[in-house]
Length: 329
Image 1 (cartoon, rainbow, N blue to C red):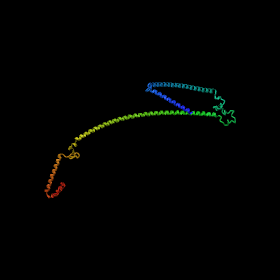
Image 2: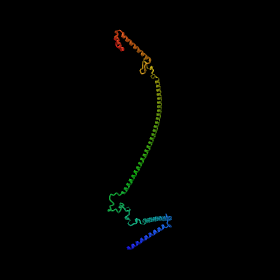
Image 3: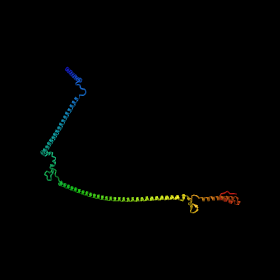
Image 4: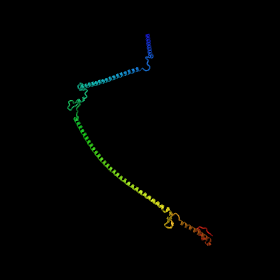
């Protein structure tokens, strides 16, 4: 078995080697043969490949479009079938419901009384009236001292409560209406009072504005008068100052007039705050008087030297008292 496998493998290797040898020979014959050898790219082969590729793409595109159209058609058919199935199921359910409603009613069933929801309402009460034959002694449905008119009394009480409630509602509505009328009247009065107050306030504001305008006019007039008076005062003050300056310049004080120092009590007296000094005549008179006094003093001294000795004491006293001369013995 292994020998057959080995022989088969050898034959396969020999066949493969032979195929490679044949391909190599074909390649060499194609390359080394100058007649069939092509240098560069085979354009015809490439064009043929491009053409085949385009044809293949067009066929592929057409096949895809056909598949898409077929899928759309299948989807439409599927939707139509589903809609038809839904309508069929709906119609069947509706028919079943109508059949059950018309021919299979619950009250026609044999055991309906066991599950009737209105069973308690349809059942008779334990006591219909006082003369009910079912009210036996053992039934415990009728006793002494019962309120037999309970239903009527309860109905009357309910009606009475209803009337009272309606009366209270009417009274409440009337009270609300009266309160609303009073509130409306109060609001109207308040609005009227507010309107009057606003008018009064407006009049007061107008009066205030008029008073303020009059005050402004009066103040403006007063300011104009004050400005005019200040202007006149300034002009008068300037005029007085000019007159004073002119008077001072032309007066006796700055001109040093000696006559202004003469007192009204006599020409021998002067006013000290106005006296500007003595004139030349007065100075000459004073100098002359001083010279006379010097001469008199000299004469007196000479007389004292040559006078009688008995008069020495008298002369000495006179000299001491009057002239301050030393005593001559």
